[in-house]
Image (cartoon, rainbow, N blue to C red):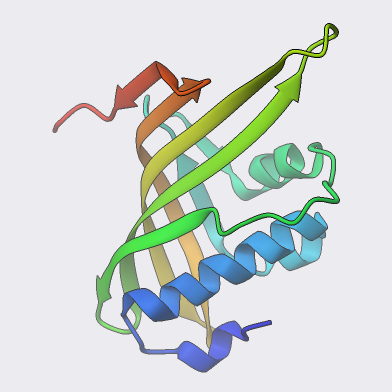
Length: 154
């Protein structure tokens, strides 16, 4: 596992990709304390409609999802990262595919894509996620787009 504190001051895509890769490992473990260790004290998640969610609510939602035994590929890709070594702005995309089977044995492939803007702060010797703002969401079913929403321009 990649220790977060070893990349302090770096503001490049590769460094933050390592953080997101580690985040996904921790998400898969559903360990509340390990997940909380990635988040700044006043973390907030902001959806497309500007509805906010606290760290506590987000972690409760994550912990309610059953663990999966299947290996998970990288789901977040860092598109850009820049800042001053104390606060970093990261644009990232999230991709997830899930195949569900109905009672008749018919499989449906669901694909979820989001693009988000994250703000990270270097606090206490490590990078902590201060906020994540979803800017775009796309959902496909068997390759056909069924939902595509973007944050309104300001």
